[in-house]
Length: 118
Image (cartoon, rainbow, N blue to C red; front, side, top):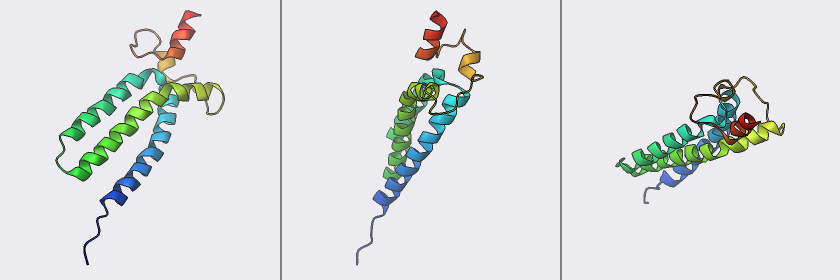
């Protein structure tokens, strides 16, 4: 009998874990910091993607690529999460980092830019 290859099942399970954790960290980061950090998060995701190119082991390269995809997805969800918080679907934090650092912070969200114009 041939040995079974469980790589696909392991990568699928890790993908589900990354997606589940991704939902949580997007909500928590938006609550404590706001959407102003989305470019930093995007940079981290792209960096992970580049790192995955240099990993020789297929399984670890795939896992790193999946993590990169999750982080990049999270960066794109930050402003949507901010909108969901404003609609009352999630709690809002008026003392989040982005609200405290309106001036001098390069990574402003669209919502902060609209509020500054008022």
